[in-house]
Length: 324
Image (cartoon, rainbow, N blue to C red; front, top):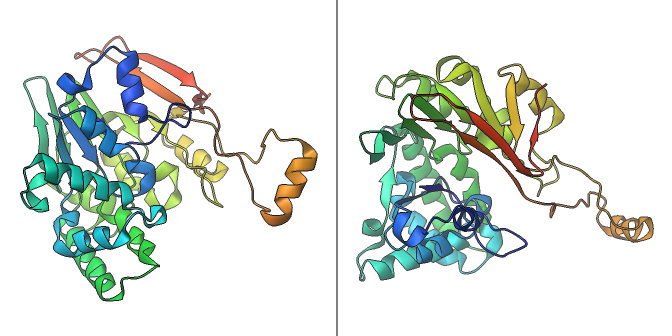
């Protein structure tokens, strides 16, 4: 299973495909699921290439995207990369072609709270979100945008995190929580709704992908209290392509109060560019907040057997441990 996608700047390939190749895994035969947690480009770039390489993979996305109005917005976006749906449009076109002309709604499998995405004797994958209330709100917000289609279509991106697909993975005695970009929410949305949901999977996760790059808007104390183990392994994926890179120092300090085992999958936000001082001064005259976002990739690999023993943690590239 592959969850989300982004491109390796050095190879131009989806990072997941490069990783599977390094493990000598053939995605055309062995990749069974692709989950697109939401439509932001930092989670979708290269997804269509993965599907092209893995023709048997079943593709899942948030059920909030099933509505016709979202399809209209995707079509209206054309090839505009800033909209955040250009890659999603390519995935839709590919799935429609693969399905032999069936409607778009039949090409995806749709995830919402407590949907089983994969099930076997040893492993299961269940989506924890979006909640019914989140879906209803997304339908309303996306519907409002359709009459005003135009160059500012990126406004729809504000809805994406609210209907992101968080995943609960069970493997033997192990539980893993992948937080996507899901935000804290209200009593009926986001992490608050998941914690209150009596139908969610039981247990606590020993491994957490921290939601939304560790940002404060995704921090929910109830999630840490009820969904993850006190000594869980947690990893943050950094986001550097904005004026406020994530995670901030305050974010890291806050999360370190929740777990003694915290990792970062790539380089921390930095304004160090590696350029000569003269060139950097020239650039900063027109772009004062200029920073290098093309640093080497990194990732953290967690391995454990089905009994929860023989833990192995490996850091690659510019990944790093943030806890002592």
